Length: 473
Image (cartoon, rainbow, N blue to C red; front, side, top):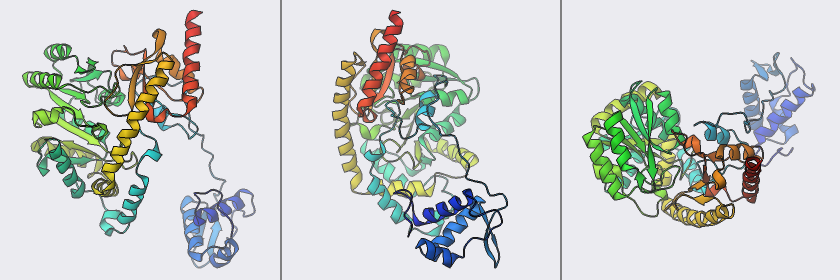
């Protein structure tokens, strides 16, 4: 039997590769009949069903076509497979709120990504996910083939309600909606509450995709300076009085990008100001499980009167299984359900929700999170030491999570450092992509879990040194 071309290749892949190679070398020309299923199965040392599957998939690609009762033939439009241009770093891309996302998502395997916003794949509970997928594969056909329900899978919603109760946030089932992702959760809320020309408030700095989403909704964006204990309360109150924003979006725990955690005093003052100025707050709690113990939550303190809580599972389980949630007032959930039906025709994929529910309710998730928090605590200390060796100082030492917000030496421009690093296949996250006022040019966000390769530090040292020499000249 012919061996697969790589470790991940299946027998079907091997058969398909062989046919493609014959067409590309013109051993099989346009109009030629392919070997019979049984004969080619014997040649390749595989089962006839494997050849049938390979032929069917090649026919779906258009490389071959079937003639009823006659067999398979090379298509008249058959060409060698298209050679797509490899994705990779784009050195000419503007350093804007999309910069880190596009550079990180389009990077191939050789590129290091200390600027990205997720954990390495081998840190995730892969075996638990595979076990859940195998279990789901035996589910009823309707789960495998039909749309998701409008509110999302009951198993996952029931689990979330129990988790919220542990955090002193008592919800009823009609206060919770599952969405296709955490990003979609924010998008639905913006569609529901904002109109073009409205004002929205965000932290400065904040997660760059908050800015990107708000730009899509054509609203005025105002930033409030962020401190180690949360937003600057005096500036927050002044902005509410002068700008009258309708919406404020924030992370109250393990703030992105700073890693800071909001104090209880700040949380109470924010809620008082929101009440006085009719402001709705969106609290993105995506990093909640990465905290060693819970910090103050606006949603719990407010009881979901003015605070909408959102989150997802991409930071702790899988970014591939896209699913988020919205917790808010029951009457708002009804309208948000209609919006989700209008824009996505139903809730998130049953594949994602059922697999996530199985992993979250299994015995391994808490152990996975305990190990993750311990590993990240060690790496935060180790990465801080390496940063200080480069005269880069962390702004705060976070209680948890994987981000460090760091100030570069000698007023070095982080965008220039990031561009220099990108030339050596290292993606960094320059400060101003997070800042609506463009006042974070001396900062970088560093992902400690993605910074374990020694090349990261060699490249950063060269990028910073190059800038220092340029400034001296």
